[in-house]
Image (cartoon, rainbow, N blue to C red; front, side, top):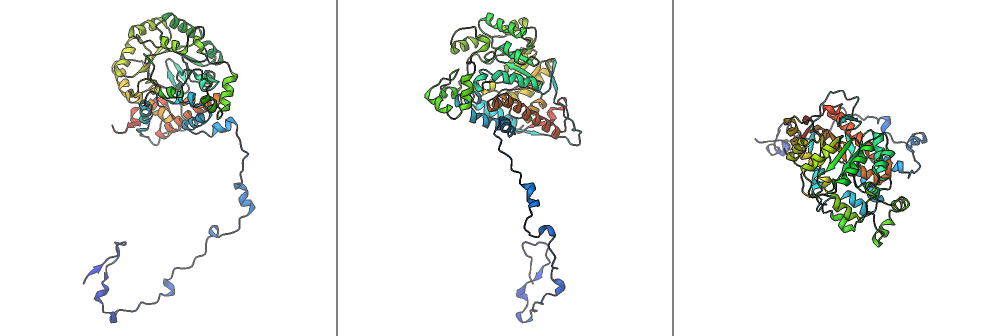
Length: 452
């Protein structure tokens, strides 16, 4: 005799094969008794259909008056990427691409952003995270957040408030602001706009040391406590978006730009009704933009020049553009108080080292050398979680460029404020979910690099 089991019910009792029982002997099925039928149950009141009452509908009818104000628009941005979308809609193509783009195939920029995505956070549980403190110390002074604003050139080209918006937003947030040598507001004007802010100055060392010395002295007189010298610009990178857009500074009114302006009237109105763009810190010098850039990027720069800077500048000296462990060690040996691991936002050498990947090795090297040189990092940061990951892997501080410029283009000073608010909220939430209440509690144990 064979037995069968229904395939979808492996626990069923084997039944006799129907072929083993003669048809004449097979019992007729018995009618189900009343007790075997499932009881008829009444529907709960909540499941009975009824005509809705107005009192039930009233709380749902929350029609709001449309609000097209800048504040409402910016409040709808939840991420830096949201601000980027707004910036792209409101800014002409040439200045937007100048900010958004990078060198050659833009491989470095994509890799830098991907590096922050290719991590796994490792949270701790059952920690008291009722209060999150994002404050830290950098170069001998406190910062309310572990992030500052990086130097960006031609900033008023992105939006007319430019460096004034950036420095004032940084002052309000309690973080450092770095003015570029190629800024469109002068050292003195930024100091006057944000008198209580912590202002830093970024320097391109010129072949004409007298010009460099004058900028250094002006920065000191204006109260800047940190000089950041950029060393990854022996020549300008091949920024192909600018080439294809016919980018000029200031933007030229060609047929193409006039058509583009028709979609962004607010930008052009602001551009045409404010003071013309100039290299404000260099305004007393004559010559074309190309002449200034060619004289500013010194291909002969060496470590001896760094020694000259260390002797000349009495405040904090930071070297920006470090891309190898060996160079990080050498600039520390030559007196740098801090380094910025940076590939210029991917705008110089394409396929350059990724600062986030370099970070653990530099941290380990400085520890082995007993160096107290501060480690800062930029390039690729687009969220507060990126900042937290960098701090966990050994950065003392971070800098943002594009992230704040997207906010600037999206809404001027209010847009920069919004960018910083987004990053602060991201950082606080990420730290709380990691079980960390202070920046100093972040360690490499909180982050794992996927694939390693």
